[in-house]
Amino acid sequence: MNKLNLLVHRKDTINAAGYLNEVAQLKDILAASRYQHLMDFKTFDTAQGNLLFEGELDQIDEGIIFIEVEQFGFGVLRVLGTQINPGVLLGLGKKMNEEQLKNNLEGTIGSLGAFLDRP
Image (cartoon, rainbow, N blue to C red; front, side):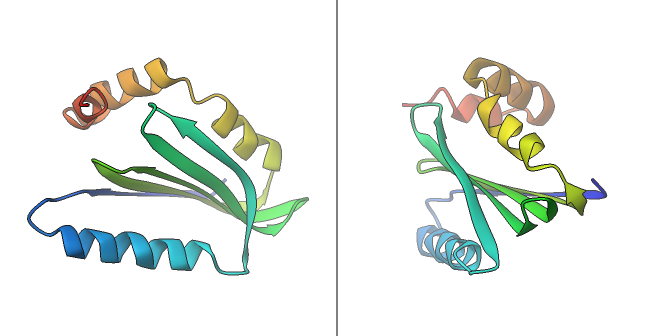
């Protein structure tokens, strides 16, 4: 792994149309044929996500984790490198423990973790 990129876009009631446009653009990009689907997942009862990759199974160049919480926003984590092991990406998806992830979010980026408790 050479580089990680993280993008978090908070949903904003003031600019709801802009947010929906951003989500649609991102989903169009991720639907491109260059990205291959690895798995879907759900967490927090209101969030869903996808694990995607670019490259070959034995030589992944880019891994992408996309998560969207309809009420609060979305996030994209890009893992860039050469020969990334697909098992590592699958492991990230399978090890998503709701409580542990929520605690980490609360501890590292403050109030974003509180969003997860909202109905």
